[in-house]
Image: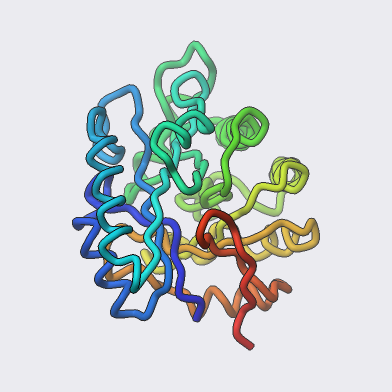
Length: 283
């Protein structure tokens, strides 16, 4: 197993426990490096993001853990920035302001248009929330809704500077084959455009195991056919569990590594020191 995980949430955002509990759990597992990546502050009331005014406390606590455990494990500070056009921008500036080691860019909340204030929440445990967004915000037009998601991903890629794109095809999680077919020409074309843009900008993609171990998806985010296309484009891959509890730090990692090898990958990328380093998958 590769003992690194750079996408984790503590109780600074929507995780279950204090950050130090994750560090201690990682040490017991023999991990060499971990990164906290709390959901970035959003300009509206919510239950999952870092709260306004808590930035300094987050920086100070992760700095304390870096120093306390520096001889045993490397601890890094990041944010998973929830990209919403017109609401959450300036990823490069945010990285500098909070002295982040790296930034994960993700889309969880889809905005139909600049005039539409309501946001379609594609994540979380409730299928009903996903369906409500399609029905109420997009008038039941799933193709329009899904297209809006991918266009928001395009905007993230084009307009922001960040290191890793999170759970790339999470739009499929609550679909379960009900609203759209991932093999449809129109859907594949949307995906392919995103992959081309990712490859052109040299952005890393995470292979995210959370959907599988939480039993919300039958595949990694992204799925195998996308991973194969990413490999063909020479896109770098980072493995994460998107842990929200210390017990999830290495969830589904051995299986995910086998999937990546099946898709043609021989290596992953880890953050080490001040940059990204390639490490080879165990044979």
